[in-house]
Length: 362
Ligand SMILES: NC(=O)c1ccc[n+]([C@@H]2O[C@H](COP(=O)([O-])OP(=O)(O)OC[C@H]3O[C@@H](n4cnc5c(N)ncnc54)[C@H](O)[C@@H]3O)[C@@H](O)[C@H]2O)c1
Image (cartoon, rainbow, N blue to C red; front, side, top):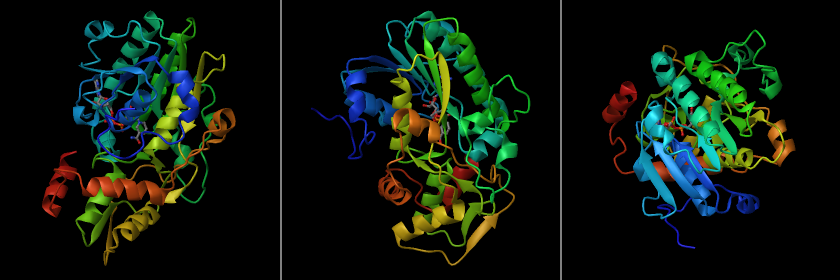
């Protein structure tokens, strides 16, 4: 098969069993130019799908996409404009909805108002999909939908289970900031909009993905960028004791694809897509230093910066039990690939000043 992919990384390990389901499907991917979205598009093209990407390229990039692939159509569009968007939803089998106003911890805490746009994007995409009789909508939700009170103790090592949220009609939900609210309400909108129709919906609560094509507004790439520039003291946000379940992007993409192919006769469902490992940020950076072969003399902990919840990891039992989904790429392997890609990335900040300026601007 001709490869249009412009780099040697696989689009998603372990998707062979999904080929028969996806082959020749017509698939719409909103936000397809994004870090995760573009890896999903690569996987769909590899499975011989006809893919349409709708993206305003506000944070996504056309250069992430296989521009010459005849099975890919790219439409630059603002999805808050429902009238213009409507034309592109007819004759599609599946919709993966990843378009969102989103960024790293700094962005979502600095610009909560901007993230409210997600309510409109979700509503438009779900309504247009249902009106056009799409079979399945997969929605990129987030771990930020989970109540923050469950994630306040770094020592508890609680793994967030889908059961923690129970019914969305239940009281006591305090998602992670405005962005978290928009993702939770996105799930709610999807459940209610598909309920009376033949369209089915799946929300994927994505947990801290990292990998190639991510940008410096997210912790993993910011930490790699600082290490490659040998910043010493080496700055981190918060104490470094906060845990995250860093999940390599091909595992995330395989989770989304499993949800797209889910044959259970259920109108709507929610599943965690993430590893169950609690990795303290301090351990994560040690792995980066080891791969790079450099260590700072001092780690400077900036407690004035937002550090997010103290503890976060996914209970992924439900995904494992339902699809046999398991993360396949270890942290050291995922980081090795990501560092190799980032170190060769054209136009990456080439000085500490340039990186600091970039991080401040996001
Ligand atoms: N990266 C993560 O760890 C993570 C974690 C949880 C959830 N998610 C969700 O996964 C999805 C993809 O995230 P990502 O990190 O790959 O990149 P991202 O957040 O940059 O992707 C968002 C995409 O939506 C597009 N977009 C934004 N506003 C739009 C609009 N009005 N009209 C059309 N397109 C628009 C952007 O250009 C971009 O391609 C998002 O929905 C995000 O909320 C990501």
